[in-house]
Length: 204
Ligand code: GRF
Image (tube, rainbow, N blue to C red; front, side, top):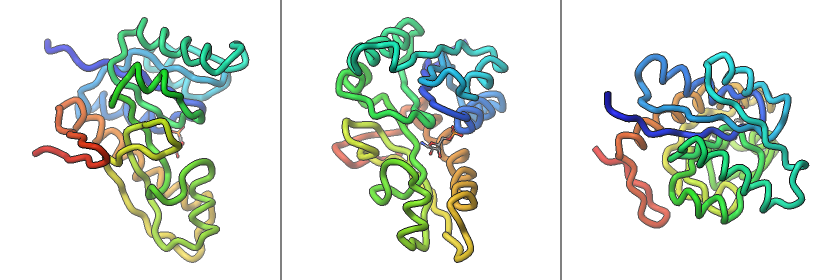
């Protein structure tokens, strides 16, 4: 049996992206092992999903640490203890500082519900509606020290209908998220993602 890359998942909430990753692993379309799921909220639904799948789930709360640095050190130690090689941010609502980025260089991947660089940060779907964008979508990207600013790996587009609201747009985008996030992770484990500065190429 060939050994699989071990991923750690950081999430803050419902974990539907995490579930889509698990589903693709189950169907054999994604050849990845999830070593641990870490949530920064004790009631995050993602924890139940992890438990149901028999995956180690850990809660690490910012308020239990005196500084962001100490909190992130705890994250890093937990990830290392689970032998994590790839860090997947699936709805993790915090910006990671350079100590985490340095611990996993070019090995942290995030999904954001807009076509970056438009609408980074919180409430991306609302931002798109308020702005009057005709198209939006989602972006899978490597994480750097900025907010949603790292090199773009893949994007998917949805049309913003005139009667869309934040919730309906979020639902449309989420469908695309569930398609492209596992696809990118499979390309990653296959060694098909090449990064040069901001340019990301998908190798044949
Ligand atoms: C998704 O919209 C994702 O793009 C954003 O946070 C949300 C997480 O949703 N980063 P879920 O927890 O995966 O259901």
